[in-house]
Structures are given as C-alpha cells and as structure tokens.
Image 1 (tube, rainbow, N blue to C red):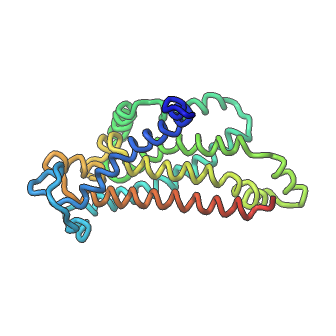
Image 2: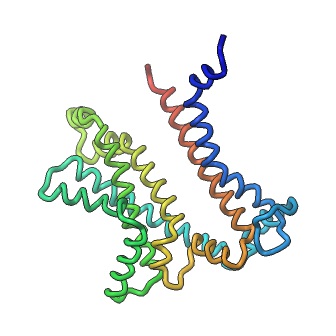
Image 3: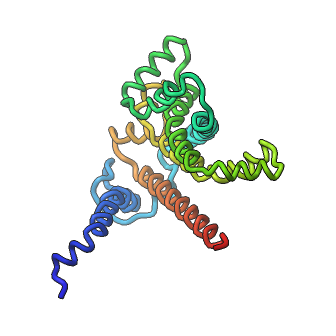
Length: 268
C-alpha cells in the first residue's frame, strides 16, 4: 500500500518542476489578465472590470508603438550583427590555435560576467570621450557588444560537439570548402546559431540599464515602460507584453514541432 510519503518521494522532482514552472509563468499570467482590465484611475494594479478596449487600440498611448518599433529594429540589427560575428568567433576559437587564444576567450566572456551598471557607465564614458552623439547608433553598438558573448557561448558549445569526421567525409567526396561549410557544417551548427540569435534578440529587446545610459533622447520600449510607471501604467503595455509572450511561446513550439518531425523522418 502506497502511503502519501512514498508517493511524495516518487513524484518530488515532478512537483518541484511544476512549482518552478508555475512560479516563472505567474507574472506572465498576471500581465495577461490585466491586459483585459478597465482601470478607473491611472494605475492598472487593481482589477476593475473586463474590457477589450486596450486590445482594440494597442497604440492608443502616445509614443508606445514608436518606442516598440524602435526596440524591435535595434533588437533585429543587433541580433544579425552579433550572430554573424559570434558565429565566426566561435568557429575560430574552436577550430584554430593562435597566440593569445586564452586571453581572447576571457575577453569575449567578460561582458557576461561584468555587472551591467559597470558596462553601461564604461560605454557612456567611451562614447562621450569620442564625441559620439548618444542615440540609436550608440544603443545598437552597446547591444551588439553584450549580445556577442551569448552568441559565442551558444555556438561554441554546438561546434565542440560536432563530429569532424562528417566534414572529412564531405571533403573525401570532393566537396570544396564552401560546399562543406554550407551543406555539412552550417546545418549541424544551426541549432546553436539559432539559440544564440533568439537569446540575443530577447536580451536586446529587454535591456534597460545599458540602454538608459547610452540612449540620449532616444526612448526604447523598456524605457517607455519605466517612464510610464512613474505616471501610471497604461493597459496597452500589458497588451504588448502579452502579445510578445504569446509570440515567443509559439516560436518555441514551432521549433519543437520541426525538430520532432525531423527526428521522425530520419531513418532508424
């Protein structure tokens, strides 16, 4: 006969996992619920009544969609640049031996270990000393710099797990360096590259501290949310947050479905 203690011991890992998952998703659930709220005052912190007004007009707040568009542009360009540079750096650090390789490896991962406030102040001092006007380009440069480390980490881990015999087999079949890279190396490294790109996009879109130091008069979406919270939180912010969360979940589910289909299609 199973006792409650025995059942708890057998399912402790599952219970802990579900509790952790609920803890992580709870803020998103609150944001989603309050995106349908119709607050009576400026602050959307207490439930009043159900309403779809914010969903019907998500750009009803001045400058909200403008800041959102700017954040998406910066995140997109930062992701493309960081992914291209990070992939090249990861391959170079794994496949080649050169003088100062250990030092370069430490410097690449330094932004991941450095506190954001220190990096933000350092970049601000750099831009001011160089006479560069703060704005879109300074934000983009800063985002590429701190996203680069995460791309290198993701791609490097994937490249280290690759079997070099596959590329050797391609060369034995008279494939050139470009053909080998495009048809063999790149498809195998694609999951790591995609992971680094998605992580870069999320980090860039969500960044506030570094952006706040180096933005000048440019207002991104996180800065708009912070500024709005001082005066009152529009329901449209919850709408945008809910939409971004749903899109992220759909992208992850789509990736898992594609991966499962590929596994099933592979010959056993």
